Amino acid sequence: MSKRKRRHLTAEFKARVAKEALKEEQTIQQIAKDNDIAPTQVSAWKKELEERMTEIFDRKNAIDEAAQKQEKLTARLERKVGQLVIEKEFLEKKCDQLGIDLSERESIHRTRLDRRVEEK
Image (cartoon, rainbow, N blue to C red):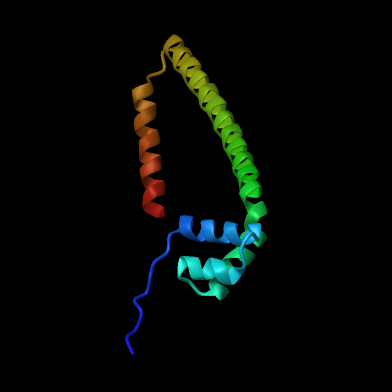
């Protein structure tokens, strides 16, 4: 007896066969014979299609909701960055007006950051 080579069937093929079975214009056995596959495989694909049809629309809504959440988060973070930039520029201007040297302050700040990184 010769063994039959294993075939790799595409998702499009499986969907087409399951859709044919769902239409019920032909019997499962006829569809299986026409496509050279086992009738149990056709039944399994039909059942999976029936069970997962609603996921097509559910997933789209879930993706839309996730995208909206991400957009809101991005907008909020962009506003916060803008606010911080304005505050920084305001403080730099005030430091200039008061004669405070920012280069000295930056070196102190960098030293503190370096220490924190080393501690972790």
